[in-house]
Image 1 (cartoon, rainbow, N blue to C red):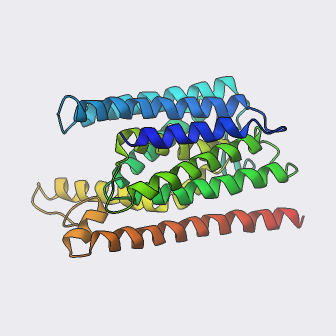
Image 2 (cartoon, rainbow, N blue to C red):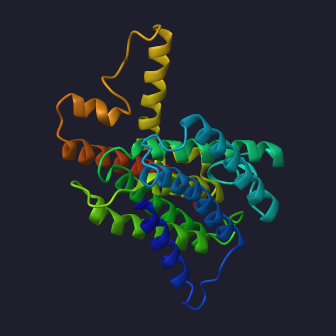
Length: 295
C-alpha cells in the first residue's frame, strides 16, 4: 500500500503549487486526477485484501482485469464528455497524423490506452524501485512536453491548459523521486497496486491530454517490453500445449534474475533502458517541433 504515499504526495504537490498566482485549476486536469484516484482506489481494494484478509492473490486477476477495463472506458467517456479534449489520433500534436476518431472511437481508443498502460506499469512493479524509477522518467518527459505546449500555443493550440498538465506531471515526478528514496533496493516501503495502477493511469491520461498517444509506447518503452514479455510467454506456452516457455520466467526482469543477474544490476540496466527510450521519445517530439517552427 506504499503507493498511497505516491498519490498523496502528488496530490499535495499539485494542490500547493496552485497557491502561486497565475496557476489555475483546469477542469480537464481535475478529471484526470479523479481518474488516477479511481484506479488507485481499485488498487487499494486489491492491496487491502492481500494485507488484511491475508490472501496473497488479492482480487482474482480476471475480475480485476474486467473492472480495470470498465473503469478505463468510463474515465475516457467522462473526459471526452466534460472537456474539450482533442479526439484526433496524435503523435506529437493534434494534427499529426490528425485522423479524427470521433467521440465513440476516441473513447474506445483512450480506454484501451488507459487499460494497457495501467497493466503494463503493474507488471513492471516486480523489483525494488523498478516501476517508480521508470515512471519518474515518463513524468519528467510529460512535464517537459506539457510546458513546451504551453509556451508554443501556435503549434499546440488544441491542448487544454497545458501549464496545469505540466504541474500535474511534475507533481507525480516529484512524488516518484521521493518514494524511490525508500523504495530503492533493499526497499523499506512497497508500491503495491495502489501505486502501480495510479501511476499507469496518470501516464496514460497525460499522453491523451497532451496529444502524444502514439508517442506513449516510447515514453513507456520499458513498460511495453515488460508487458510484451508476459504476452509472448503466455502465447508460446499455450501454442506449445503448455510444454514450452520462451523466457525462464516472466515478466522479463525475472528472466534475468533467474539467469544470475543481481537484482540491483537488473534494476539499474532497466532504468537505463527506460531513460534511453524516453530520450528517443523527446527527440521525436523536438524534431517535429523544429520542423513546425521552421515553417
